[in-house]
View 1 (cartoon, one colour):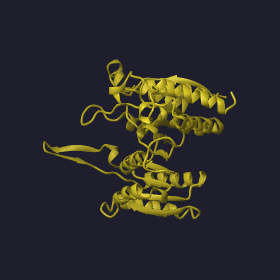
View 2 (tube, rainbow, N blue to C red):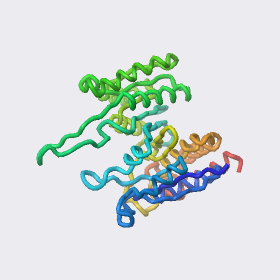
View 3 (cartoon, rainbow, N blue to C red):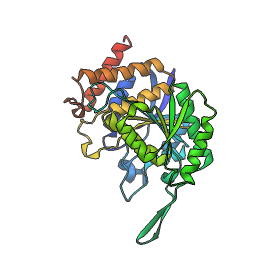
Length: 338
């Protein structure tokens, strides 16, 4: 079977990471027709926007996309392309698995967490304005419908993947209307899943708990902003954003991307770790129900990192991005008997 997949290389180090990831994915033998489209800061002059309409059109057509990192200006300039894609395509669930990989330096072992982040509202809806020259206001939006579908997604994910517990993350002790509604909905949804343990944690306490005893937690469901922060905390437990994959899922469309940024200062140097993008491709293969290929690719990533001979500088090696990608591809073929 041939899959049509929209490919957005991104900007900064994104294109070279995508090249390495494609080599690794193609080694699985899964037939993919890559539909390459451009987005990001590098196409601003060409199209007048970092998100040309043909990107959205392609994703609506293929229904599956993989994206490299894209730069988001801080404090000024265009809003996040990542946020725009999630809103435009109603990719309401952001899935960020966090798993320890032997060979990746970390203070922790055997971490296995999944952050489920609501993707469409909260403060990230961007409803804000200047009140006057010296004051700005942002409106936090939480709705019952969006809260229910993300909580059901989290509990369904837990059930379908053999997870034991869902923890709702909130600040309902202070934000009693918005976070209070999110918590209320989560507790109501939990009643429909008696086989899954349910609990809740205040977001600041959750951060401390993750650092002290991550082994107590399993699936975390969060409003948008907390999910963004918590997922970075979780990535820090297993070695950083360089090994942190991500998926943005809607009812009919899926977009896969690494959690980290575009690192433009390293662009063109062939030195950035491609692990997060390759592991995002693992999530994509699982979504396509190519489970054997997905598990072989994941095992290959782990084997290459453990061996340590063809890994990038942040993993203690001297290999470039493409060399590591080729090593993962070669190991993938070996595992699949190719």
